[in-house]
Image 1 (tube, rainbow, N blue to C red):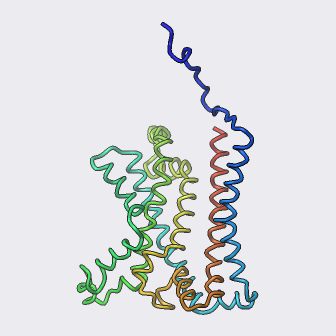
Image 2 (tube, rainbow, N blue to C red):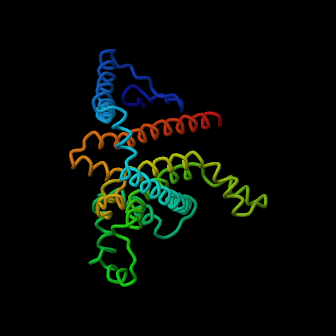
Image 3 (cartoon, one colour):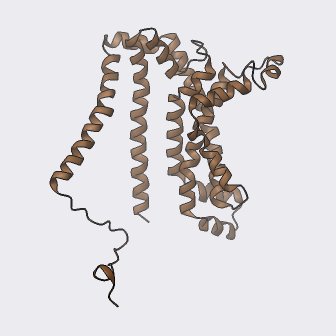
Length: 291
């Protein structure tokens, strides 16, 4: 029996993508469109930030970055990040391990819950904490009686940042651990290794690049988070203003050069994050090619 379309299709060998034979004009147009997009929406804004930051010279730049309120904002941002990232690291490893290694009731619900912060606006996330821990919130009266401050204080900023960034490490580890399987862990246990030894000497080395990538993304998001922190912070200058909030306050006060000077710190952080991301992907690809 003759098959339609001139017979059976030849199977392509795995690992060899089908060659694309677009006309030179199409390739040129696509390349030009990508370059124009990068120029207009990435390089040009970055250049404007640094140009505005240095518009009045290095003296003004250094005064804007090292003035007391800016230093307090930087200190609060760093402190929040140092608290949030380790907690997210522990949660990400635990959640990814549970999802990838075990089958249990409610597994799909857990995966959905991990993705929930991605679906909720950061502003709404901040409002949820105000409704829970604010003076008129669910636990507000109880907290006031014990003189415990969460909203408009460091704990509220940490909670809001933690909620917004919680999926980042888990979402990097879950697909990685699923693809790796558990054969090596089972072999280690068979050879007499304890659970802790198996985790530290087998599991962690296998997922180290995913851990590095997740930590970098979580750190960058923690430092640059604005929406949720803006709601729970109260904008108390020098006390509850992180770097993004400090930039907003300077801009609203028409201190444009100072605002761009402090914003350049976030811009440099973004560039460092991109470089580290590229290095991790490059090292991970080399490791994959060597297998």
